[in-house]
Length: 149
Ligand code: RB5
Image (spheres, rainbow, N blue to C red):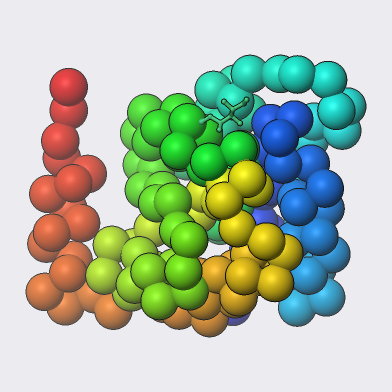
């Protein structure tokens, strides 16, 4: 683990309880959790929460980010609009490891209406236990980084 062991967490209203479970889990693993909310169960808008979390990662304030909404899809789309962010939605632990190993993902998105707590924690562990492999994957990640609209 590098000097920066902070992980930012955020979600929309659909995922607040699961976000809390994940926060406790990764804190127990020794990571510093930066949970930027929201805490109110009132309906809110996933793009602004995805953006806020993504900016924490893009600036280097947090090494990684985990974001959640009902499906994980909308908040992932928002986060990926921020330069330097590579975020994937995962519903299985294998993919969560692979997006670190091959794609150098710096954010993970989860769907609280798609997966249960046990699977969510397996996916989080798959993401956190993996490291970018570099090598032939580095050029491909650079190709992603170079893409502009
Ligand atoms: C909110 O109802 C829902 O649309 C949101 O959580 C997410 O699933 C969108 O991608």
